[in-house]
Amino acid sequence: MVCGYLFARAGVDVVVLEKHKDFLRDFRGDTIHPSTLELISELGLLDVFLARRHDEVHEVTAEFSDKRFKVGDFTQLSTRCKFMVLMPQWEFLDFLAGEAQKLSTFHLFMEAEIIELLARSRRIMGVRVRTPDDEGDITANLVIGADGRHSTVRAKAGLSVIDIGAPFDVLWLRLPTEEGDPHEPVARVVAGNLFIMLNRRDYWQCAMVIPKGAFALMQTEGLESFRARLRTCAGFARDRVETIESFADVKLLTVTIDRLRRWSRPGLLCIGDAAHAMSPVGGVGINLAIQDAVATANILAPILKLRRATPQQLQRIQRRREFPTKVTQWVQVQIQNLVLATTLQAQKTPSPPLVLRLLNRWRWLRRWPARFVGIGVRPEHVKPNLFSRNDSAPS
Image 1 (cartoon, rainbow, N blue to C red):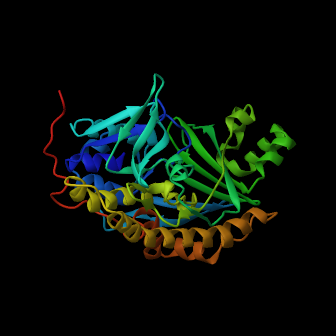
Image 2: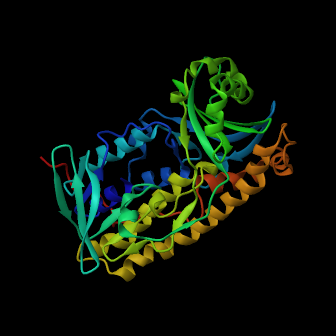
Image 3: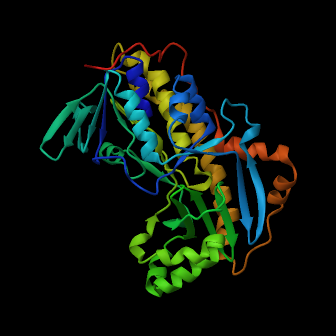
């Protein structure tokens, strides 16, 4: 959506295809990072965006048993917005779609699922689309696959994937909020469990990190056993676990970390999770995907206004974005192998790592985790004048 909006603002005719009838998928990442807020500001949309219902996170904390540690401080970042925004992803997508549809060069089709790629002489020329009413073909000078870690586009294109692997999965669930609950996100480490809670005002969106493949065993042990484990994890919300009435209230995210060897072939490019599935560690997958989108538009919009992009020009996107992808994935793997795997195997709550104690003691140190999460490696910025908004809403 970000990429399509930027292309449309640059005067490139764009079609965005969404296979669902709306954006209302729960348990997606809700974080809008300071680097993304910077981009929204550069596009002149920050005031409009922040007028929507949202929450601001200025610090990140972690809890070991009953002890709380400050681990990240966004207020020290050199950005316009020194905070991270929590907003349901469907709200963010709705905001982007609303702004994009004011441009005559932007076209959004819902319930339009890509089922095949169209090719001629090994060059991708478009896509075959299924809608509730029919099937049809859309030709294009460039097809961009931004359809996630289970990308149909990359599978149909036959692009080779490097599977890095992850030793854990994530269970998503909801718990009710009550008056007096904390506002900031909560991360709790207790008795071999890692439990993360994001306050969505009406409910807590909760993530329970579990060993890879452990959910099937939990289901076999029964709902009451699962609730008992949840009570151990949930801290102040432990008396609300009865609201989990069945395992249908629990959604499994099978965690993968991978990346494509090549992100493109003639006429086609993959970005975001379609090019590199990220671990949930740090919640930075959205950040990486949006940075990919900006780099893609910066490099390709001037080209696509005049002609097709060559394979070499498509490869520039990978050269630009592969380094931050590899660095971020390396950090995630170190954290998951050295911290998460050890935590999940522990029978009792481990002692807080030295790094947490140092971060909690020295405020200036907390800018570095905040920078990694909030800005990332090699942040992108929209090119001045390329995306000047000189279009008007179609009649």
